[in-house]
Image (tube, rainbow, N blue to C red):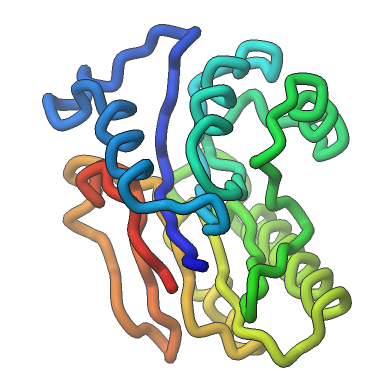
Length: 225
């Protein structure tokens, strides 16, 4: 069984927001993702999606996007991105999935998941370029990351490897939290176009940073383990 990752699917089957306005690379991007996904992923694999899944504003408008995802092989874990305006409470989102028989999808939000010998934790994170009180938001997101770690360790023990999912590139405050828990791998997305000139990958303070935005990956899933 394998773990794959890809973020920033930016699906808009109902909203009709074509992504090719951001460049020809995005033309029919959902078809490219589906083709690669079906070639790689088996039903017993796990796929991590760290944010910006759907352009929908309201949960009720996400049906076709979730249908697309549910019909792909594997178990999928979604993290909130800065454009996931449809995101609401875990209870209401899980209820929506149950009502629509989307059985292969769940959400990462102040919680954790165990897959084989790995614990999956995460939080959205923050960027200093966003509007708002940066110091306050960093503290909030670090606290949420701590909650995710605590949930994982309490439920699954401290003898498993930990994979962290974030939407924004991890700032030093988040890396410091990860170091406390001996994290070896952190996934992130969010960056597109010219922003990708600033991508940081590889070992940083003992943590392997992996950028998994769909366009950065050429709309091909990245195998993590």
